[in-house]
Amino acid sequence: MKRQKKDQLLTIILTGLSGAGKTVALNAFEDSGFFCVDNLPLKLIETFVNISSKTPAISKIAIGIDIREKTFLTDFSDAISVLREKHKLEIIFLEASDNALIRRFKETRRPHPLGHKDLRKAIQRETKLLASIRREANTVIDTSVLTPHQLRKFITELYLKKGPKKMTVSLVSFGYKFGVPPEADLLFDVRFLPNPYFIEKLKPFPGTSAKVKKFVLSNNSTREFFNKLYPLLNHIIPLYSQEGRSYLTIGIGCTGGRHRSPAIVQEIESNFKKQKIKTTVTHRDIDRASS
Image (cartoon, rainbow, N blue to C red; front, side, top):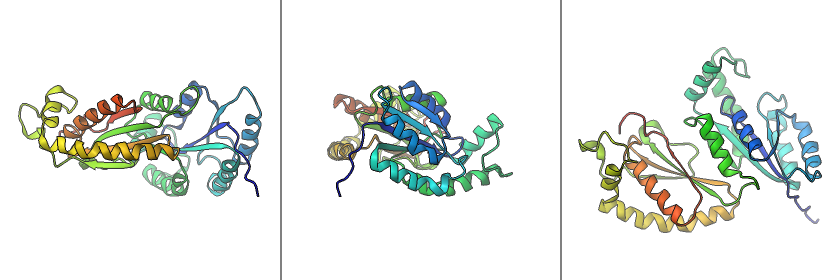
């Protein structure tokens, strides 16, 4: 049987945990030229996408859907499978840490959709319920440390006026004592490098400062690390891109995420810019307690 050719309409399904930033992300898609609809019933999505694909003025759409939709959990996989057969489809799943979600719900004073009296238990229950949907996502974005402005910027950098072009490499510096970033595709531990934290004149400065960067980058171990890291990245990044990935997240970790990992990330970013690799940088833990 001849396989049906997919149309050129780019369809984004935006979903994830309640409070993780879906509304902000959907607004960013709209600002990037997408036709957007929020909380559309699953039974209507296929009809909506089919109509949009036949409308010349519409070339890309973003549909927000979450646990508020009653049949979300039971019908999602079947609905997505049908869409993937005919259309160019990407699923983005937004998530955040329990503490970040609790803080957001308390700030907005809005109840959790699951209506549980214990907010933390409601969040944990939703996380378990959506685990299978998360696994189907093309892209998972952890918004725990992202402000609404940073999330909007991240979305618009990924999806410009004509949709996603070159794959974006997202570099994240972090501290192991604050946990590994769950969105990372690749992780590199640089705790083997000499730590500026133990040098009195460098301790107060972050890894983005000239003094700390010079100390970290001038070390022989650092140079040897880069001599092995760059050939590896130059080999695998094009392979990820060929798989149709929108972005690849590389985590660089040290003890506290303040000195060594930010310095390494800054240097990698500089190298990538020379190669014209589209890059974003997040220093997740640079303003937390010193490493």
